[in-house]
Image 1 (cartoon, chains in turn blue, cyan):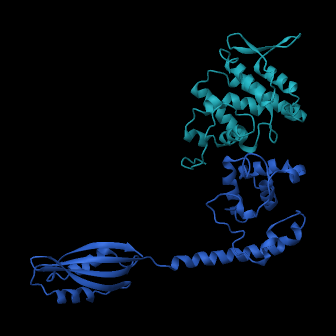
Image 2 (tube, one colour):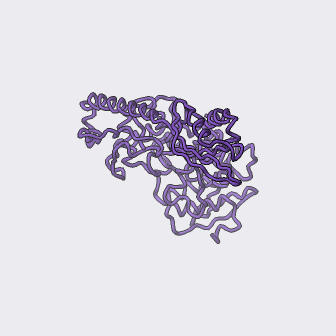
Image 3 (cartoon, each protein chain N blue to C red):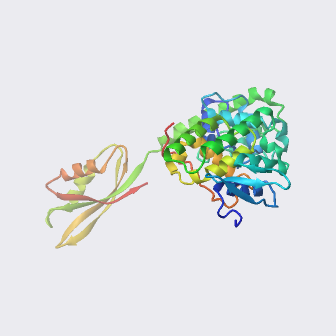
Length: 224
Length: 180
């Protein structure tokens, strides 16, 4: 929830989109919700954001009766589109009370301070966001490797498979599973980093040992 | 409404208007002419003819003069929309007529919350009643296209006491058809 910084172009654009099909911030009558957002906007939105401007002018016409409008003011971040992250109260700290403007008069003195605070929070949020993608996507794969016949040396086959090395590939446990007529297949676990190793690469490298390997299948593929 | 049965659509609208204004007495309407213009016979007085005239009379009768506009400018705008309502949105409308009406209205409402800008007036009520049968047939795509009309219409239909037995029309913003 929230429109972000309502003094920035991005925040106003969010407000504009939000108000495209609504006359008020909440419900169908003017309320304290409108007043709260109105006070945060402070200056008339530019003419190209006509939905925001229309709403701004409309709420302005209630200026004299704003105290008598229904509803209770909430923190700014509680209003607006539900799918937008609230940045106004993101890094809650002891300065949190600054956001609630009880009398609408201390606007001037807090603006400098709150501006700095907001920028700090934005920077914090940005850095948090940039760290997130560092988490690499990994998958656990269970491979079935089938030999040519019952005379294939399974120990040698496993050794061959494990000899395959690639960046982002880790071999796990393995076992031999009987398929019939004394033939056993090798079932082997491995963990890969999705971006670096694909099943195509594994298949290519494993089937390259054509003396031992007849075919290879992916038995299970799980995202971690 | 038994009284309204057989009357023209405009007389039915007036019955709705009476209720939304809180008039409980219930006037009896006659119809006149090919277009079935409503006629109201006032006790010991002349009869009133036409939707806008009778509607204005009803508003005064209900002592809700603010619905006719507060300032001279607002009053003029309300009268203008009542005229538009009577002359432009009359049954039957062709597809092309509807398109033009909605397009004009959409443009007009872009920077306004109510037809008379910031105040709810009789113009909103009668335009809502008059447009209901048009809006109800619109596709989701058209509602999205005439976004400003949709917003206004949705707003008016939620205004207390206005919608009554008319069906509530559902508007949703899905941004499938953004053409902005």
